Figure: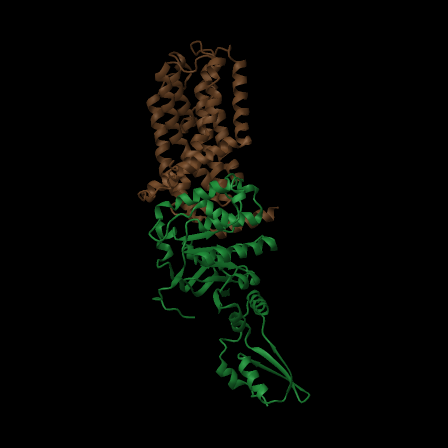
Length: 318
Length: 299
């Protein structure tokens, strides 16, 4: 994966990002880019280095090597005006327990006031935001009394109140029940659709990444091993789809990255009695990656699939 | 009839404030909010009331006890300056230490770190909140005092002014200690061991109820700490002539008291920001996640 450093739409870019804790290498050359208008999920098993990556992007951790640029600035040199453009949703729910919901959000909003710019009025209107995250009825409640789902919605509001250009969420649905998780996904879609905020989110939950993100970055073994839409990631990590068919009583199986073209040719032969195309599911692909990660096996399974080599490798249908 | 003019917008477009000045102002408001939370918290207020009333009740039972060698002073009159010093020490060391360690533990400090100049806002908030937090105890002790135990301060308005000055200097000398203690402990249970235990021990031997209560072995060591000198300074400004006979060395040393307290303040005001910066830099999501999983494992 290569990205042009001069790309104007790039909001977050890392290249050759490396990080080790003592002897343990956590990030081993991470290259990624997030562009304007995108919702990107950084997906990977626990311990893959997702949190380390976002902490480096947020400017909270120094990297060992590599280049990082967030909103045009190296996070290690980001000033407060830069920080004011980034919203952070933490994996935390115990802070500010004595504060009331509106009181806390207004206090956080206050910290953004000197950083208003033309075209970026900061902070947002607190009451409007409370309505949007569905907490206006809980505005006078102490945060300690909120349910898990309500607290998460407050955390999103805290992340959004400074009208960030980039919102970073670290495992935002950890510990939520399925209903609250779904509600959270809907909220995220809503805020992103309305404002076009760029979102970078970490998760170890594949279904979540597939539901929320336009694009998945699969982090394993300290590298991005797959990058693309959920369907594309399935292709990349699990290799080609299988086409199974019966012709003249005989069963055939053929593996291809371009099943559409293959079946077109196949059907043109006119001998097919029965046909089935089996796509590698994203879940299978992900579980395979996690298994290899845990077992310490090499992670790049089939290399980057290329239809031309694929065609050369397999026999044409009869 | 004309309709009423529309109300002015809640946030009139003002000149953009300087980020640093704004962070300090937001911190002041944060401190006021923390103080409000304390006033509304039955446990916090209850603790102050129980301790304050218990002290007053004890002193009322001792109001006729004349301390020998004091020039005719009663135990309560002799004890008041030391009690005020103890309120400063306990409030300014233990208060910030517990608040800071709890807020490192629960992610509040990390949350503030994600905001622009949030660490400034947070630090100002802690200082303001903790200083205000010591007020209820002063009120509980000093408001009923004249009715129960007579005039608490010898020397009228000048004496009161001196009391305020000593308390301000004592606050500067002790509050950074609390911040350093809380930041280094990082967890309320460790504050109990490393901050609360030494402070309580110091309280027992520093002559809170008058210098005559200092054990002879402790007379030297306690002079290295701010509690003795704050109590001594307060006694020198509020007790009538003759009371100095009970002091270590039998004389007032207000200049030396100021010097020792100022030295603690200078060291503290240099050390606290450095320790706080280190603590803030260590607050990361992964550090918090480690603490949370440790918490879950502890059950």
